[in-house]
Image (cartoon, rainbow, N blue to C red; front, top):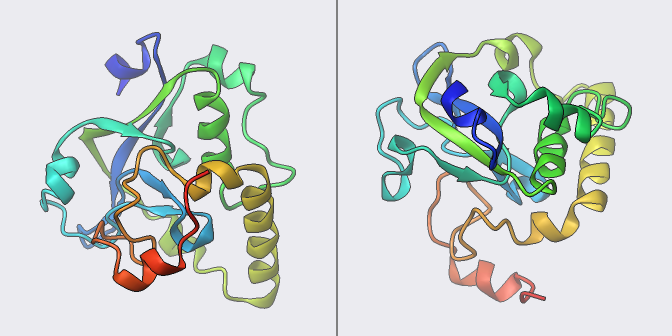
Length: 182
């Protein structure tokens, strides 16, 4: 990860993160899942090659998770860091990566780095009324600020579904209900 982040054209670099059972929790972030953003390959087996073997190769994503992220201090400061005011818990990493991308940098998923990540298990889901309300507020903020990028993630094929985090092809109904490119 350090060798990648030290390159001038690279902004954020994220790792493959695993649940305690060895299944994938994060392997890049896809914009548009759930109307906001979600984890690529969530729940896939650790050694699955992924869609066109992308889990095995370091490659670009619009965003990666901040649970394990490297970025140059200069880039962090250039975008004023993470937005803790509007995005206290959810999507602050997505917002951050997109701001860094606006600097003309590329964000990378680093396939060679694997770590176990327990935070989301210990934190729980955002289903309690107060947590759910905060999550919805943060999702609205993300969608308002980054709607054009979320609608057409340049690192994700428009032929793949946003209904499931598994890189499967869109169904006919999804094409019929999708908005055309602007």
